[in-house]
Length: 52
Image (tube, rainbow, N blue to C red):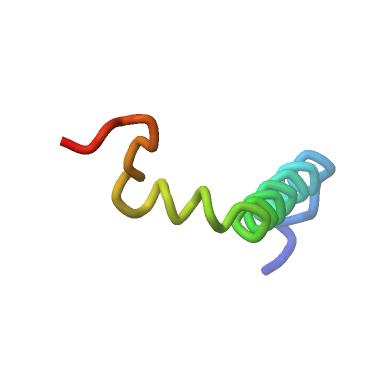
């Protein structure tokens, strides 16, 4: 059954790229928890804006 799905260099490269992208995304999530919280939640108040 596995005859059709031989691991080609191109396929290996694509899989490597996908793994690298996944790892990069994970590292970004872990290294920037604050900025991701800001983007997911409500926008932070502008500190230089005087209270109405």
